[in-house]
Length: 199
Image 1 (spheres, one colour):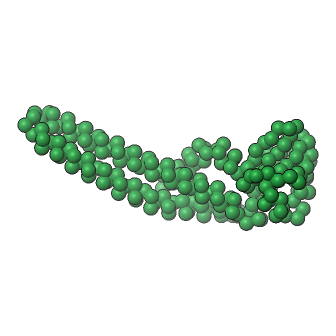
Image 2 (cartoon, rainbow, N blue to C red):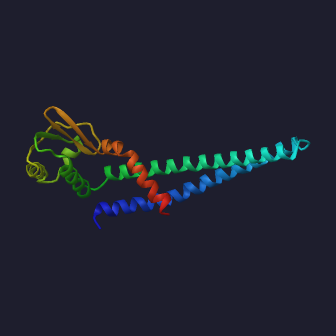
Image 3 (tube, rainbow, N blue to C red):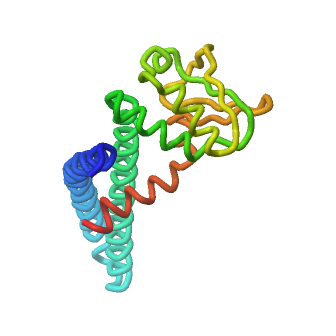
């Protein structure tokens, strides 16, 4: 199991634990809403006790339906919060990864995003200062494999994690933030399946 897979596994374990706690809270809230709705329905039934049986039944059905809707809304909100927390946690884990894990991920990203053109790569000031020995040569080698040339810019960019590629004056934002943003729906769906459908 690679470092990234271990990290993903740990994130998912932590997320499942957090999901259990948040879902328990959501169910408590849903039960409270249901109880309140039931009490309101019973009060309404007492007030209209002189009316026909059909009218009483209609009020009860509406109250139960309303409670069910409130419960489903509470659960949906809780699930959305859990998914957001998992994605935020994964993002922070990437940003705070040790140098070996972090730059191994950057190598994979380079293989994916480098083009067969002449360009420039920009890192944050923090990453420029901690580039592993020989990493600049690795960047150039990856670019050559793709049929291009990539020069390391000595000017830093204000980015958190990842890098920016520049080809012919056009910038390709390959930062963690940009990737998480562009894949947010897809990642949310994956987290939802992992936490709520496979549990």
